[in-house]
Image 1: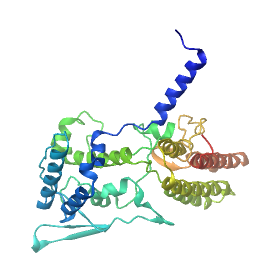
Image 2 (image 1 turned 90 degrees about the horizontal axis):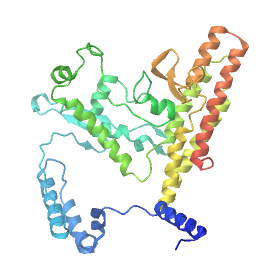
Image 3 (image 1 turned 180 degrees about the horizontal axis):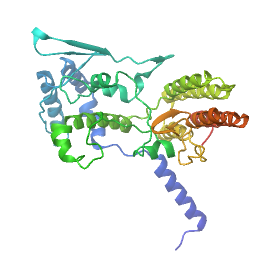
Image 4 (image 1 turned 90 degrees about the vertical axis):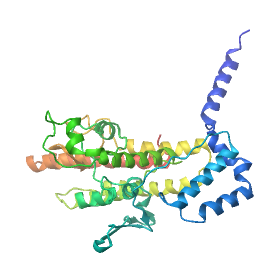
Length: 380
């Protein structure tokens, strides 16, 4: 006996809705923490008293005692077969909102401190960003340094630079389809680059003996990946994005030549307002579908900064806000299409060439406005 066509369509629709709307079942260890053996008042009081009685940082006796307590709780209350793994640690620890590092010998003790405070934009701190914070706490290849300190020493800057291209593997994500990416390296020039000696043997013997730098970078990337995977909302901060775009627009305005950047300034202001709005909405939204819809907005806002026609004479590059210069494929420019148009106008010195500059400004402004509409949920 076959079902009527209408009934079949209804069943398919109902099943599809069930798949989309039903949140995934939590792992067993999640439900375990909600069970009475862990969540009744007596258990909570015991756990709080045991785990907060003493500071238990890695490598301390108190930390071993805390691990033993957790092991005992799991062993007696679940079918999980837990075990404790002992590690030898050599770590630096955050103190309040700064890091303090001291050499072991008292006679030549040297203390190094630096702040992890980031520039604030209104009431929204940069501290919500993913990467800078984790740079501060990950161990560098030198066990007396953090990645953050090593980074400051080598770059003399606390800023993360923009991604260029140079035929790098991240270029297709950022420049072509508008997917955020990050490139993390222990960098510096080395003489065997792209030669026949640029191989595993050279790296093992000279480049990174013991592969300590590789471990440090893997630690940073791992922490960032865990944050991205575990956060309920994508940790994208479009307020800081808008702030950086505003600086670039102001630099563009200083060039003169009768360029009108007011459409660009207005679109950036709209982006900042939309970013503030979606941050407020994140605090109020509830339900799996609504959370997913808001994450879709955060994800698509970056892709809205691309244009299907791409940059003039370089149509593969679709991102209108950040991209490589026409004359420096390894670098990165803010508003690369505008930058290319200005270089051309300075060279040919015609009215039409400066009108093309204005057209490129309009294109970028439109892309940023589209990103604002995505954040508001008015464009899908």
